[in-house]
Image 1: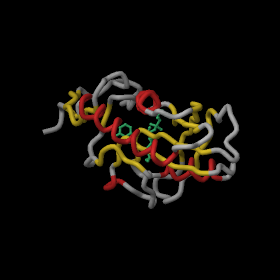
Image 2: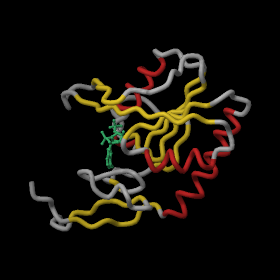
Image 3: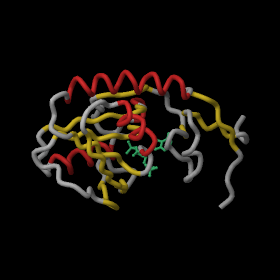
Image 4: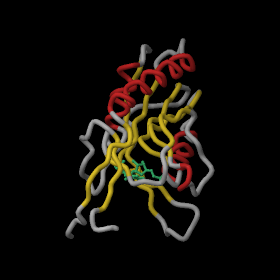
Length: 181
Ligand SMILES: O=P(O)(O)OC[C@H]1O[C@H](OP(=O)(O)OP(=O)(O)O)[C@H](O)[C@@H]1O
Ligand code: HPA
């Protein structure tokens, strides 16, 4: 498949992201202070950069785990299924859990993942998303912490891909197609 030509405009610089991660880590610290060992669950693949930065700013005992889910279903239907491609390695029953997501768009992925993890009986489950695109929402969900609200732009970088590319950009950029006027 040929790729349409595009360029990437900086939307959120690496410096702004770092400053926001620091603030968020303070709030998460306050929420989970005194916890035995917080389980920080990254949703693969997009959250791998964000989770790495969050846990390094977090002055708490943490265990890191990953879940890979893919959301599928008829685009005309308002509900979607989530298939687990890689399940957690550890147990979360009775534990404090923080789910780390890169972006909440339609909201299906986070909704389904939260439902799935709640069924495992954690003591407390909270969610954090670096980015939120509220204008795209199809299900009513909001992460407990959001890094940045963004407009309806297709974004890449800081873990987020476009056709599996650009995850390694250190900033968040928006994709602009060069064949559009
Ligand atoms: O709110 P939603 O509309 O459900 O979309 C958000 C999800 O979509 C992307 O994942 P993707 O399936 O592209 O996988 P990836 O994380 O491996 O890139 C992104 O990383 C979120 O997990
Ligand atoms: O803006 C986006 N970029 C990449 N993947 C995505 N998945 C949902 N929204 C996006």
